[in-house]
Length: 272
Image (cartoon, rainbow, N blue to C red; front, side, top):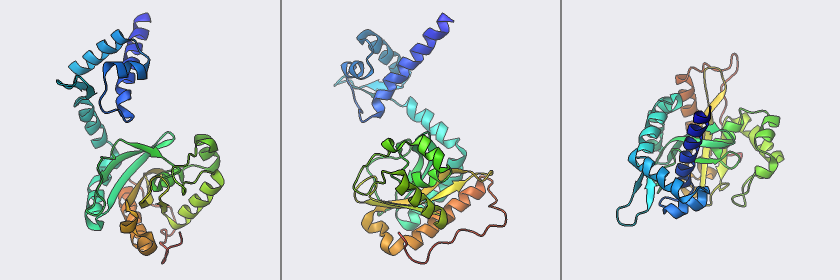
């Protein structure tokens, strides 16, 4: 039992060391890792040396700074390629981004955050970073709103206490009353929108993806700069594209649709 506890502690410490590179710290000194993790210097040095030997971290030969290595990339690639939503959505999202020249993103819910499974960039929506693997807030994104549609109001409040509905811009929804109203509208229309709620200058349209049980298991969004997405002119077009893409992915996952229920209609003009 003592041996098992020691092994578990070693694994937890190693994961803590790797975790420091995930929060805006691409390159770190040993002393930085010690400070962030609270581990001892000798323990941290041994863990970094072991992780380096396994390619989980690598050390710059000139600066001596540590950064993530290639092993996490390999593991991440295998994990995402084996995810059923990623398999069904990848080609369709790639084609969507190329056709609309905007970003196409697919995410699932991971606890109280959304987790990007994939993203493709259109010519008019370039990004300087890869979204795959990143986590974002549910209440401040179109993808997150679609994922929250799968929860009852009381479940949403338990998952996201109102104090956790942080504001990121002047437009962020920060109360459950306002969030409920937004989600009611999304449920009626079959899609959700987001305009500068997470970051200034960007907006999106998103639609929920369902699995064979009918549960919302993921969401797909079309995103980009405000001027390019132009919801005042293109909401109907982009909403229809998002819904059609979500429906195709859902069918691939085994969803056959609600019995006797008509397909969700896209409004003929913006109701945002």
